[in-house]
View 1: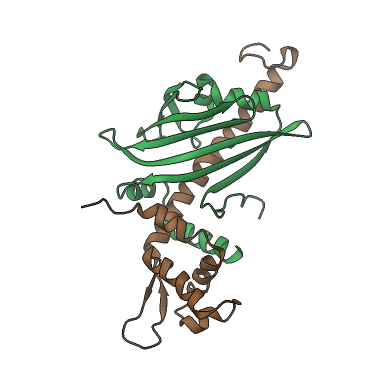
View 2: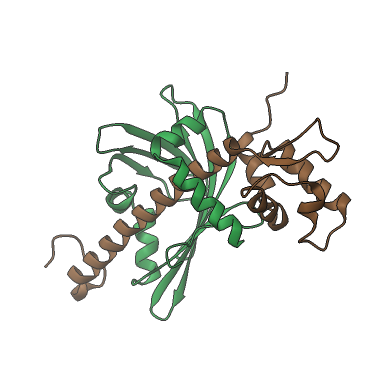
Length: 122
Length: 158
């Protein structure tokens, strides 16, 4: 059995399109039909449906089966993975860069005489 | 938002931009000299008891980051490009307790001179991940609800 596609990459790829992000932002406020989702965009219904298929494949939305109008709902779990990853990276790099900034200030202050001085010359 | 310098672009990368008040040669050295990287790599209160960098194409990266609670987060990577003093590209993988990679990220860092300072742009892109990665990432950052809210905000603005 082939290994399943990498879920985080699938989610990120689905999120890579501004229209799909706008659709998700709309769905974050509540479920909607394809017609309602298409309204803000100058886009055909089939085009919107294609975006919805990508989002559905990535597990970012689910679509009702019972009703003819098949309302779309946002699903939190994959977004959570992305949010976790984004938050992890934000924290990791932002805090690392704070420390890098501190280091650069310190080394330039101490190393004025010789350009990039070592730690101990004062 | 002043600190909102992280986002996904159309290649689903995360992009972080930062301007440092330092010449880019110094910044490049701070990124490639293992003794210097060990000083700043990781969040506040983290240390790097192991920091080995062979900053040349194909060269290895091995960093063991230790959190304030003593947990060690091993990381390995490989340099793809090293162009002094303007560009570093590397892949990196976080390892589980058995030393197997959980997910892999391609990171590109560029340094551009900007009025005596250096504008650094970091782009990170997941190239491979596994199911085990999610709880690992979760453990690194509590409070995903807040993260999701932030993401939703950024999605709404996109």
